[in-house]
Image (cartoon, rainbow, N blue to C red; front, top):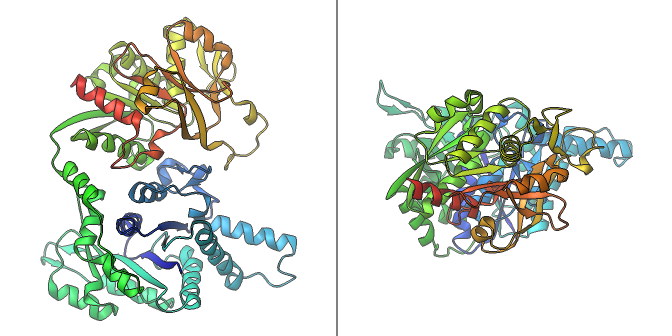
Length: 533
């Protein structure tokens, strides 16, 4: 029977519930247990696909085309597992499905209420994920903070679920903050006590307490938390601030958190196999060299907008025993080409990531031109590839006025156009080309050598594509279209093999990178950057 672990957060938001859930998943996997992680988000949006990156951060995309919360990226990276549509559920999706059922008459005229109809729908999502994956452990993270009105239906649903499946089959992990007051030199436990009391008032007694803290928890404070929060002393887990999120699983393991969970749920306490993860953390903490990489985009004020890109660069660095330093460049600062030299002169590589809209595009084109003309290792992602094609068409292929129809409805040369199947699409939510698609790489190409194979599968999120009418003319000028869809109709990868590393792709390789298995395209970029350095 699957065992369930519910992760909630209190005191403040952004405590790192997702990292705790992902780390626990990693510890289960190290013991050869199967695990899935599910995120319940309390906002009314159906999914984060239409939300501004400034508000929500990155939209993570799964193989089956789900647009999800960025925590799904952490889940996949930590557990080395691919998740999907069932792993991210919002209040909007729950309410939409309940309303659709009401409109169809599924409730036979009953008054539709939060209890039982909304809570039943939430519980059905838990059960559906369990049936699909059949894991040993099913971890469910509840978004938001205890006390928020938006999360109440989810909290009530897990209260019901825990009682329905019986004692010993589920437990609650509550993440809180222990603030440190420098004036008195103390860690304060009262906020955590109050948070647990609020959770209890909803009918849930947490079995484990994970405390975010900047200082070690003294024995007296640990005993006080155990006493007032009604948890065993060994279930008060310290989670101190760390330089790398990948240190968290080892910190939790050192305190025996996984064994506490296994014991509470009556599961076998197996010996963990963490050697590879320990080696990874050792490389992170003891790099032999470093390299600076620029990310040129328009959401640079919120690094979470590009979190998978940042992590993928770091993963590639770990493999080369190198620390990757990120230099954020707002592409609007590069509207004047002369500024590119000032901003890029101290970096060894540059990434132009995905995005939407015309703002900052000319700056991105200038960054790409600078990288091409100065043999600065370059990787373009999604919109970054489209910009690479536009820049090359304008400045090398002689197609002055080349542009994308996303930015100009009537360009002289529409080298980027709306995909054929997108022309009649109405609405924005979940209507792009989403999910994993196969790509065929040209034999002997830079991309094929990086992957070590000629047929790959990568995740997409876009509406626009290279206009096939211009591929021959741009190819004749020297840009190699080295990756195409199986039917040869969609350009997927472009490159300049005469440069150290100039590769751009229509897909999002950052979604499939893992800390101990860097993505080939990011690895190629960092390798080239280190050679340049």
